[in-house]
Image 1 (spheres, rainbow, N blue to C red):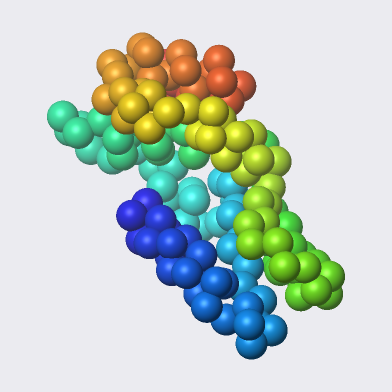
Image 2 (image 1 turned 90 degrees about the horizontal axis):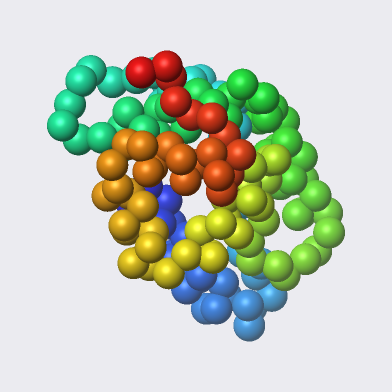
Length: 138
C-alpha cells in the first residue's frame, strides 16, 4: 500500500508540474479487480500475530465473490485518453468509489483506529460500511 500511496503523491506533483506543457496526468484507482494478483492477496497467510494480511485477504475474497473484470480498467484508460479530461483521479470498478468515499469520511485517527481494532470490530465495520461479509467462518 505504501508504494501505491507514493505513486499517487508523485502523480499529483507531476500533474502540477507538467500542466503548463499541456501534458495530462491521470491516476487510475481500481477497486478490487479480478486478477491473479488479487486472487493471491485473497489467499490467507499462515497464522500470525500481525492481523493485516489475514484481514485484507478476507476483504479481497469477499469482494471477489462478485468479480470485476480487468477489462474495466483497460476501458477506463481508453476513455480517459479519448475524453481529453484533465480530471486527476479516476476510480474504476464497483467498489472503488464506495471505498474511497468511506475512507474520505474518516478522520485519519479513525482510519488508524479501525486498522488497530480487534477482529470483531474490524469485520463489523467492513460489513456495516462497505456491505461486505468478509468473515471466513472462524
